Image 1 (cartoon, one colour):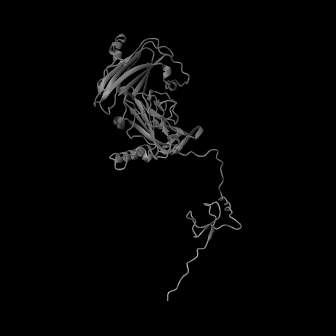
Image 2 (image 1 turned 30 degrees about the vertical axis):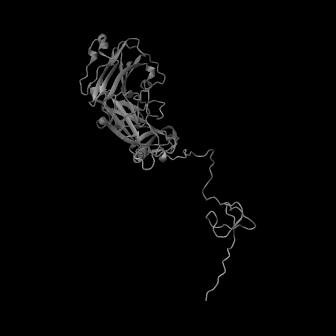
Image 3 (image 1 turned 180 degrees about the vertical axis):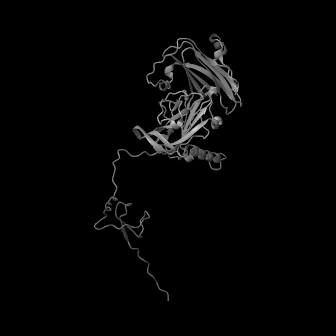
Length: 437
């Protein structure tokens, strides 16, 4: 026998869910927003009671909201993306991945990201912008030499910041490393190198030029100790003021007599995971803030002050047109002389007597250095040129530089800068200072 069932009547459900702003009636136990019906409390809807704060927590006032990286309607992974199926879609994607691997993910301005920002300065006002354009990036104030000093017995603070290396003698190297980032940097690797005088330093000669390496930790840019403090770091003690530190090379450096102690010093400082080098083979202080060079020769003498110097031109990335020139600058154009003189207010003037300086044509690497100091002073100028232009091939070359000044008087000095340009860009330089002893 078949029974007849009356249709079920829907029970009304009053709901004061926050999505309504008022009491409504639903025919199901689910609200329109997808959540269960929230019955009203009698005599009406009341806000939920205030929750008690979790024990042990406090509310800290904040004057301004924390930084949030800027965003746009189009995410970075869609900028410039070719349409689906386009032959350039896969190369574009690989390029995006490569950019992230080299530079990290892009959230906002690099200085505002919670990351370290390591720097070895090329000048006192350096804040890390690269590449360096129009400035002698090879005169770093953050690389120090203390001659006649073994590293094992050297103090943590260098005895001088303007010392000159002594050939065939023990020398200790130091570096001043900075962190301008919002995050601290741990296990920062600091590497020290001593190259032959060069206008084009690169990784090819690095294995034989390595002096030593060490590790330090750096606080963020907001941390500045009032005084230098001795810190027991990952590989030994060093001096720190929080966001910057002075570190000593653990190995003694013995520059060869072949260059009379005139060398190119290079320091690299990087943290490999969060703030590494753009390229592990990068040795250019012009292109990378993790690299600094000190390519300086000081010739203290009364009369005459003379130097004959062979400068390597490095290894060309590809055949191209090159130029090497010499410019004479006033002493006050060289900030590093303040370290050498141990005085911020130096008062040096150019010599009043003629200065002979110039270049001989480039030669194959290994060619013997001619000594123009044996040539009469009056005849040297006719043998030298202020600039040499030539085509660089794949063979390593070197160029010979000579400078001399007679009758230097007290408080007189001459600054000479030798620069190499390839395709119009300065890729390296070396500075010579003739100064009254």
